[in-house]
Amino acid sequence: MNPLVSNTVPGPLLGVNIDHVATLRNARGGNFPDPVRLAQMAVDGGADIITFHLREDRRHIRDADVQRMKAEIAVPLNFESAVTQEMLGIIAQVRPQYVCLVPERRLEITTEGGLDVAGQFARVRDACATLAAIGCRVSLFIEANRQQMEAAAQAGAPCVELHTGAYANAYEAGDTAKIQSELTRIHEGIALAQSLGLQTNAGHGLTLASTPSIAAQPWVQELHIGHALVGHALAVGMERSVRDFKAVIARARAAQPPVPSR
Image (cartoon, rainbow, N blue to C red):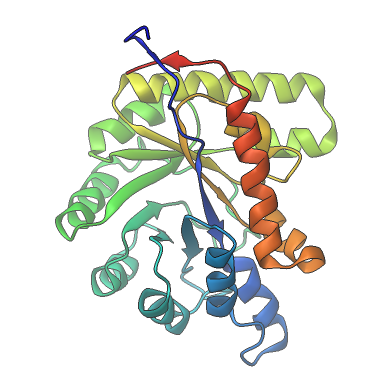
């Protein structure tokens, strides 16, 4: 085999964002449905990672959910967090395996874009150092552009998670030109991340239909998917939903030719 070519690049791991189960629970109050129980069902279905975002306003996941997931879920936890002292303090107590630093605005329905690493560089750099010191792998949720990617590398983050929201929206709208331009932008972002030595993950807004084009991108190592996966689970159950997403991810990656080794 050509030593410059790899045939063993694995398909992306699947991180299941469990926030949307908590949103449904909180709409009625009480304890049902239980996001921790559904997280375990996701693991039983093959989820590699459980992702959650503890927001400052606690609109879905709550502190008690986080503590229970740490105690009861065996796969790595990916704690999405705003860059605040409160959240860094909670993370220091919980010690999740992974942390993804994200932007957060009180009035948004869901995360609307990537973190401005370049614009708040010192703050993000200090957070990366603090989290690395307690053993958390840090990723930064950013747009696929050079300024933010280079700032992420300089801030000391080993990973980036590329925001796929614009691509997902274009896919849902059937905007072929926008789909292609977004895929090109993401592909170029992945290549740049590789040149900077950054692990590249991706997520936001992906569905069963739109996931394959991202899963097929060389060197994407994790996909973090929530709303569509939980929505699909309402029809087929959580374990089946996870298996369905993992199947489209595996097929998309298997269909790609070998890629150059780093």
